[in-house]
Length: 114
Length: 116
Image 1 (cartoon, rainbow over the protein chains, first blue to last red):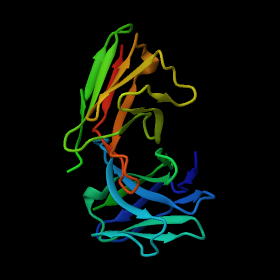
Image 2 (cartoon, rainbow over the protein chains, first blue to last red; image 1 turned 180 degrees about the horizontal axis):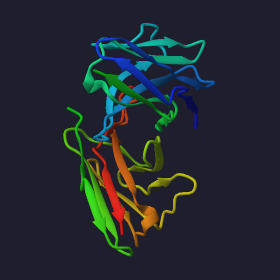
Image 3 (cartoon, chains in turn blue, orange; image 1 turned 90 degrees about the vertical axis):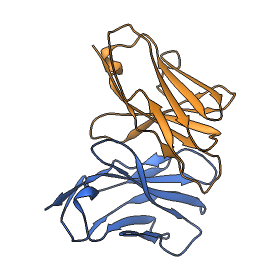
Image 4 (cartoon, one colour; image 1 turned 45 degrees about the horizontal axis):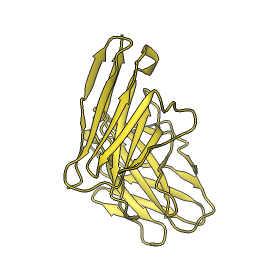
């Protein structure tokens, strides 16, 4: 399994501000997929955003965007205009194009201050 | 679209009981389903992968006789925890995948299992 590292166990952000979550991964492959999942207190896993490695353009979904640096093997998530509903645990995940399994990072707990 | 239903959401039962958890893909066909276990404030740990009509593939350290998986159709997979004991108490989550490379896994809402 590939190694996915989320170095920030916890992050706190003021409502309406921006927070960036870091994620790095280890791979020797050139074709793969990257995902960010959100897990709120309800523990439902919600797909936030995904990126295909062959695409140079960074993916965006409304207030969520990524900074994909393929050479650096980095895939950070930026949450803009943070809302109380963004409070959750966020998991970065990697999937090889040759395999179907997801490798998850340890997660980052995001707290949003009103 | 891409809805995965997992049932039940919460189970409390006595030690020694067997518990069955269902995972259904409601609006798509899932060639592959995955079963995860998650401890509080930790990441998801893959237990096993199941493909429709074939035996499940278990991750190292997961007892296949304890955690029975059946993937009878393209929309249904079940996980049976046999002779459950308190140490089996955990949060179990399933996910379903169409098999298309660029598609993500879609997750069920999870099952909180408590063994007394």
